[in-house]
Image (cartoon, rainbow, N blue to C red):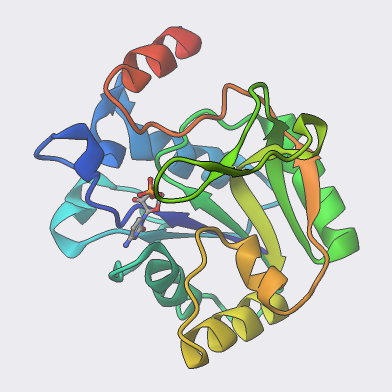
Length: 216
Ligand code: C5P
């Protein structure tokens, strides 16, 4: 059984809006609704858990959705979502509510590859050169561009990897910025699955307009 955990517990401070970005309007509904409806429609997904603050749940009126409380950090929200999984669930898709433009074929490919490896994520090859720099802005490393991928969600993990990774992160006070990072903590292989550039995260002013145009 596959469960989807949609993370919608962030405050969206980068957009200077009173509502978090996942609750802003986009093409006739809210940003969050796009991913909730995507997973409710996907026949290979058996349950949908949405991590969303109590005060906002009125904006997510889907009877089949199970809610979880947000945590302080993204990974705390994920840990709270994890506690809501039903016992029969063996694979998890974790998704940022702020990415409303998933493509069905991409997520299907992710699940297929994820089942083989145990941990997988959608990603797109970097289109710009990426450099690492120190706090003074001095370049410390320039990785080969063809080895660099920009990571997206959904991310796929077996229940076992997710549980062990969350436990390890908690016990050793390690912060991860994405979900397959938990598999990495356990030295487990992670498969990148090529996704689409349209699956970008609504982050800055202007991103909503860009998403609305793509949905037209
Ligand atoms: O802040 P950022 O854009 O990285 O957040 C990615 C996703 O994680 C968003 O959909 C946000 O709502 C969610 N999140 C969360 N709980 C937090 C922080 C972020 O569910 N404490």
